[in-house]
Image (tube, rainbow, N blue to C red; front, side, top):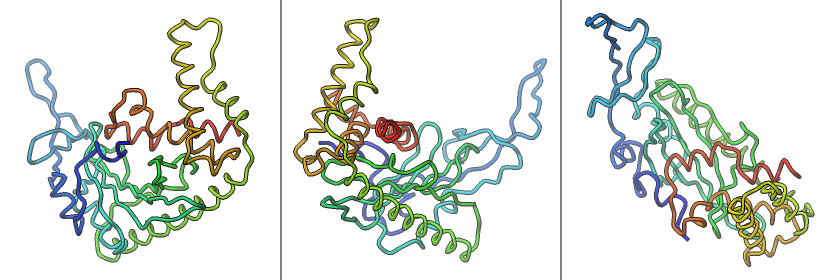
Length: 296
């Protein structure tokens, strides 16, 4: 099995601080605001109230924003991470095509029931005015590397951070993230235990799969085959050996669906095709595991 994190971003393991992370991931660039112009009657006219945020090293436009937008350089935006904890380990960093600049860090692993989970925090920012500076907490089950972001409601595992300067403010931001992390892990612990004690039989799981991927009389033969393949994969995941401790429970069903969400492309295409964009779609989007919890 290929790691979810293997094909995204740049490897920054061993980096001792944010400065090293940004250098290794080639994110240590600066951004400046440039006026925008348009052509009218063969004359160049200024677009009022609008600036293009441009990388100073390459000239690439990262976004078009209001002239009231305040640029916060990558080094400034992420510097507070240095003050969070000595236990934090940097894993990956990069920039997506739609402008998300991110750093993925790992905190100390935890044991929930009989399983070990790695606790990741994904820090992200942008220069296009679309994405705020935030930290997202996402535990990952080590035995099969399925991510459990679906366990949280929309805001429970997120910390939104304001762009501020000064050491005192950065220390406050670091404390915000630590508190958010502790709160999210506490919620996760309680819910995993609840899921493990909630009965949900294999028959109920099959009914859910049939509801999530229905087969109807008006489907083409090809469409029916695809739905049957999904049914087969999900029932196989439910019956996997490492899931048998949780057979007949909601946690067993959730393990199957989170594995499906995390490794769907790998299973269908026989290789990992995970990209930065896919990673963040999974992190933010409606997944099968979300549908399972709503179904229940």
